[in-house]
Amino acid sequence: MNKFLGRAAVAALCVGFAGEAIATEWNVSLWGKRRAFTENVEKLAELVAEKTNGEFTMNISYGGLSKNTENLDGISIGAFEMAQFCAGYHPDKNPSITVLELPFLGVDNLELERDVAMAVYNHPATVKDLARWNARLLMPTPLPQYNLAGVGDAPHSIEDFKGLTVRATGGIGAAMSASGAVPTSMSATEVRQAMDSGVIRAAAFAPHAHMSFGTADIATWWTTNLNPGAVNCPVVVNIDAYEMLTDEEREALDSSVDEALDYYIDYYNEQTMAKWGPLIEEKGIEQVTFSDEDLEAFKEAAAAPAATAWITENTKRGLPAQELYDLVIETVAASK
Image (cartoon, rainbow, N blue to C red; front, top):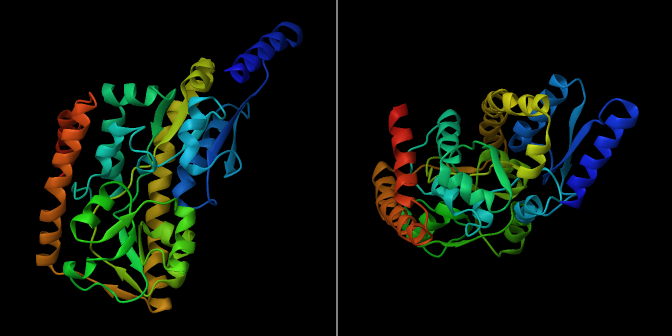
């Protein structure tokens, strides 16, 4: 808070003595490297700078400000003004948005992923939940359905998942557990080393992450159609920093969200997905496609129990859990 108050005081002095306010610069905490996953933030920064003639800029850091699993904590104390994180890193801190990570919700494209996420983000209970961390949900990072890339013997039926050690978080982890696999949660940046050392045999990622974090380099098999769900990774801003923006700066930020998401979805579809298929072919990775019967059995074993458990647990937390779950299901249904 001293940081923000200090900036405000300096700005006031500049207005008084120099006749104009100093430019606004936000620090943004991401991780890894620039990739499809971060293009919504990169585009947002570009648009905001353009709309404010360079008077409001964003300094994007890839791991230099915080660990990815601690970005929400950094937002809460004002260590930086904007950050990206994934709900599954700390479900107890952001239970409302973990509804978006439940398995087999029926979300089958990035546009729908975006719409469902924004519906949940704008729910009063979600706003209140994240406000506990002084965080304002700005936009999602829509991701396609996850699938597994692994080493060793490939699973060719749901029964083959028994005993499989796999990096899978949130609802995907629950789905894998229901199939007999042994899910473990770890940061994306730790996955390649864990696979190299034999700690895990597979990882559940979207295609961009399999490429960015090296699992595609060593994988011997890939599931083409398991599609258990995706993680939810929002971009948030510190509430105090957001409220300190001028009206013009806030308008530039808010009005750039939809543009940034449009760009991101086009980029992901046209750049990342276009590269994934040829990469699998080039590396000779075995493509495992499950039968309709196996997929239905997997869904039956995982979807309803996970949803029921989530609703029960989060109702006890004081969240309108059934209402949030119904909101997701209704938003998906309305798109069909």
